[in-house]
Every structure is written in C-alpha cells, then in structure tokens.
Image (tube, rainbow, N blue to C red; front, top):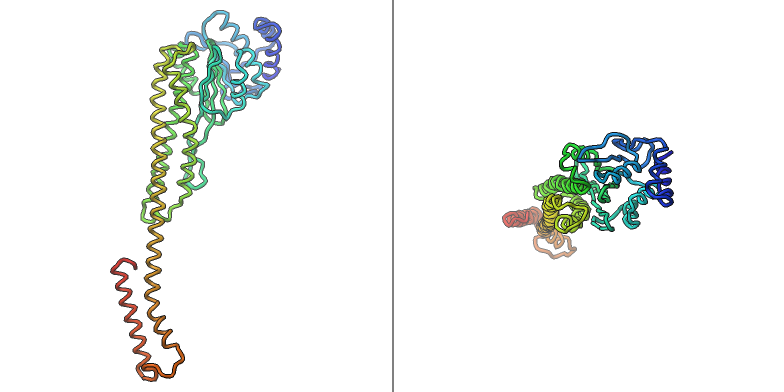
Length: 375
C-alpha cells in the first residue's frame, strides 16, 4: 500500500474508532521503513520518521501510527516526522492524526508564506524562509544571487513535523548534529525548533557575507578609472536580490523574539535562552542587509554622478572643437561670397595669407582650451 493510501486509511479510521483502533489495524499491515536520507522508497513526501527517547533515536521501524501510539502510551520521547512538499492527500492523514489546525495545514501545503509564529491550542506553527547563495562566475544584470525556500514546523508536546519547500535547506545534516548531542535533543521538540531556527539564521549570515563580496566587486568597478562605463543593471539586480533576502529575514524578528521572551508551554524556559542567541544573530543579519541597501543606494548615486560628469566633459570637448572649427568656417564663408570688390581678392599672396591666419587662429584657440582643461 502506498504511503498516501496509508495516510488516507489513517484519516478514515481515526474518525471512526480513534487512535487505538488505528494502531491495531496498523500492526496488521506490513511495516514500511521510511528512514530514508532523501525520499520514501514509495515516492511519497515523507523524508524521515524517527522516534527519540532521552535524546537517542529509538531503533526499529518507522511506522508513524505505531510510533505515535508508543510515545503517548509511555508518556516520554517524541516523534520527528520530516516531509518535503506534501500534497493535500498526503498530509490529510497526518493532520488528522496530530489534530493540526486546518489553517496551518493549508499554509504548510501551499507554501509561499511570510515568516511567522502562530499558536493553535497546544501546537505551535512556525514558518521560516530559507535562503541560499547562488554561485556565479561573474555578476551580470540577470544573475540570480539569492534563492529562497521555506520550512514549516509544527511543534507539540510529543511531536515535531517539518515541512520543507524548495530544493535547498535539507535538514538531514541538522538531524545528524542533534543526534550527536543527545543532551540537547533530550530537551524535547522545542530543542528541534531551536536547532532549525538557528540553522536558518546562520544561513542568513553566510548569504550576507557572500552578497557583500558581490557588492564590493561592484563598488570597485564603479569607482575604477572607467567607472562611468560600468553596467548599472548589476546594481539594480543586486538591489532586487537584496530585497528577496530582506523579505526572508526582516519578518522573522517578531516570531523569534516571541520564542525568546514570551512564555510558551511547549518551549522550555531553558530553551528560550538559546532563542535569545538566535535573535542576536538575526539582528546582525538585519543590520547587514540594511547597510547593504544604503551602500547600494550610495553606489548607484555615485555611478549616476560619474555618468553626469562624463557627459559634461564630453560636451565641453565638443564645444571646444566646435569653437576651433568655427574660425576657418567663418573665414571660408566670407570669402566664398560672390562679390567683385573684396580685400586682397586678386592678390597673389591672398590665399596663403588667409590659410595662415586660419591655422594661427585655430592653434591659439586649441592652446587656450587645453590650458583650461576643455581638451
């Protein structure tokens, strides 16, 4: 039976007979190990389903219903279920099993949400925007610099459900780090929520460091000798990508502050101290983004000023050469008139004299403009 069909059966039976009846039927059907590093062998959205007790992974199968029943029966440990871009059908049974609010379920499936923290009874629902830096050999006016995704987290007393959207931001390495620190993992689902928040915010800092390198390169190009010829499209592209990063970082401030300061039942006060550290890192990222925005505005204004100065210099050169050419044009225009009585018109040395006067006048004007810096 596929994982989606399995979850639909869970939904139907949980409505009829409750969790115990579901568990009895679950023990009759074949177990499927969903502990897979990428995606379920059945092709479903389930990436991993693991039970933790006293900070250690409980060995054995990863049947979701059985795991939840055992955790609630013995009253210790929790289940961590990881999903990647689930469909409505795949998530329906999970939502019924954990009694998740329909609005939170809709947000988790649809994605494209603003970072936030919401409480639905005993369950927390947090949305994090993940970011990654897109490597490129040379920044152009169309280069993608920042790529974003999302991680939705449901946190209850005995469960954590992570829903990931996007091709980056895998939580596999994070899970391994937590399993290597059983003392921290033993603090329950809130420890997982903190680890995810810390992981996401650390990625913000890494991305801002990489974006700073791009901004430094653009700044060097603008203030180089031929800075007026630099492509302004690169500056606009950086500002667009910085706006995308800003949309991910800035709205997260209030949710992390609530986790760090406000009493929440599923978040142990000891974990709140760790969220204060996450908040500090988040403030650093916000300050860097704000400074980048101001710096790009300054670079853009400097580039426009350089273009204006370059245009003024070109206009002065054009004006100076026009003045130099105006002298022979005027003389030729005068002697090109068809009058019979003109000074020195029939004199043998009239032509060389006029040419000499024109050359001398042009040289005087050229020298004057060179001294004044117009040429």
